[in-house]
Image (cartoon, rainbow, N blue to C red; front, side, top):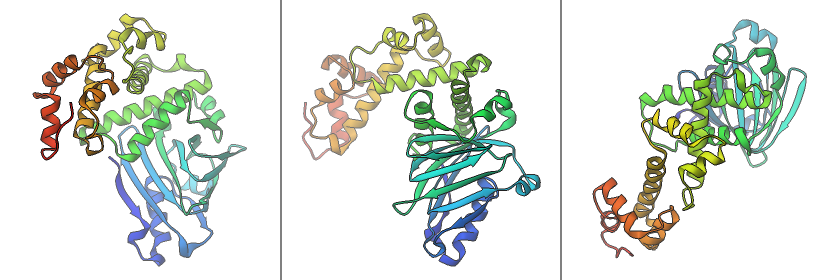
Length: 328
């Protein structure tokens, strides 16, 4: 998903800092940075241009950075940035606030106001993933959004958890995406970014209806993914968990060409299919895999699997492990 832009291990030590500066200036913004131990500097950067958003994941040694008023006057893309700390200790100062960040914390900052950051990489490097959103595309009042600059936004609960999981998903490259998916993923990034800020500003009514619905369907799909193994999972329980009517839930899925029941079934089948092909699950009985992903009746699982993939679960497993004895 993200393409490698910079890897210090591929460069002579003497060239690493200058090359890092060039990469950061291109994909983020020009900054002044100071490295505590230049001879031991290590960093990497991967990036993706998703149209409405840019996503960048980085690792780096301990350092301090600053974006000065002079740099802003010289060139400013007018971006809001939300950063997720993956590991290491970080801190940022902007708009009169100074905030310390730990693992799974989110923070908002902007390119059009001066800021300073500090990174402490206790285990060699720190890591983060950031999303850049043009100021002009954010349909929330800037004066309200600016209240959140350099404040810690929890990344483990609520909207913060949903956005963190999405950023991590993009950063790790999980998922089968093609070039045509870039704009779609950029739109989802913008929607989740807007919803995150609206949640902390209590400004949900100012988010366009179509954007709110795209965020809601993302939340619902994440909920379904977490509960696939629960045999009680149904359209009714999904609607109840999100405090919406069953009819509205069905309409959300129909707009995307699915029914809720079919989406749940397809996700369960896909996870079971992966387990059947996975050598690590070879000793698990097929019935146990079916139950793990919410299928209460082996016969119903076999029929659904054959309809989806054109062969029985046993034959599918044998296709990937022809030298083994597939367990029932």
